[in-house]
Length: 144
Image 1: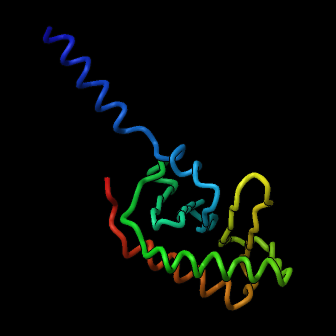
Image 2: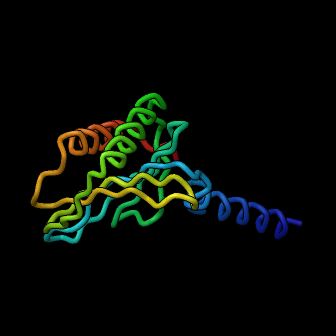
């Protein structure tokens, strides 16, 4: 009986530590943003969904870690800016030593819209959007 309880407890702990990536990928609309590269080969990616949930993945932690939510209205504005840039056919794909990106994912029926830049500055709206989203994510604390 004790062995059964220990096994049950171990299973609960194991299941509680699984990655949140499948939950994150269930959202057809999401914004992925972050940076990669540099001398140390760093990598940080945030994923935000319309209800304000945010996950972070980086080179050191591996898994997607759930963070405190951010204001859903801010994410709505971010989606609107990215849609506006897409409609204007604005594109930049200029990776550099340190590369920054913002990606709008709108489901399987629509191609992702991605802005990638390194040494060259992107459209000011894209740069301000990226900086604002990263700052908001950094101000949040992890929820797990």
